[in-house]
Length: 158
Image (cartoon, rainbow, N blue to C red):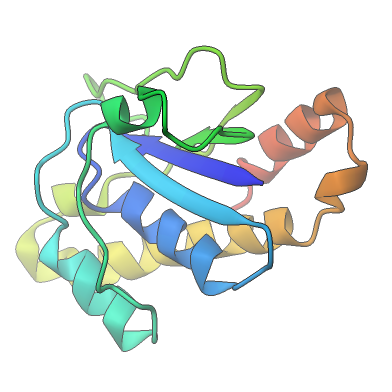
């Protein structure tokens, strides 16, 4: 099963959730992340937090969702957008994905630099709780409608 996590800049929230899911090392499950307007670099606080928590950040990079529209790109089973509800923020839409859900989280990079540690930790904690709920699902036994409903409920966990 392949999961694509989307956000506008692909530097913080989407990177965090991609890493959280992949850190679980569940056979047959792989997460990717991308952005509609990628920043071109991973936010340094994302890297600091993930490293501190024992995640592998060696391959972390900000990338465009266009990479996942290429003919040789992995086929996605789930697409999760993580854009928060901040005014004026554009959330990307991934057409054609079998199951799409929205797990909005406020952008920790929008916090003042002095608050980054707290803001990134809060975003991580919310995403980790949601990822744990996702990873506990019997993904191979849920039909598309059940999966969509369940993912939508998970997206409301705080």
